[in-house]
Length: 148
Image 1 (cartoon, one colour):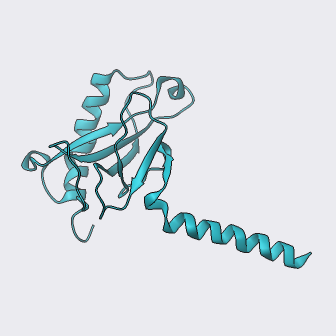
Image 2 (cartoon, one colour):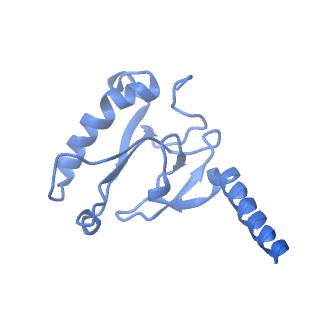
Image 3 (cartoon, rainbow, N blue to C red):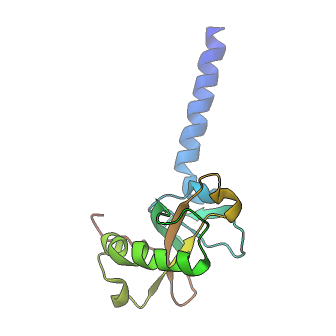
């Protein structure tokens, strides 16, 4: 019986290591995105999954902020989401991540993923801001400044 328990533990640990090592190449839920993750920005209005990519391979999205929306009890309008992103993501967080002012970078824009209205009432307020090339192409490097 002890051998079986150890075998199960080794299998679970092995699966965890494989998942960690290959996380950059796996498809995952939007909720799994973390600061520093590079991914392919999906098309569509309702997004459940994203394709992770190593930042050294072609990608068009890089997460630099994951934070709950604050300042409203009722579900925000798109204009309110836009204003929040401009204030929260395109300011100090952009500088902290890239080392540059947002207005000084013509090569990169800020996009965001926001919670759906049906999840808002259940407490889903997580916003994900990401950097994306303004020319609509891809990049094969991180926008993160060295040492950050």
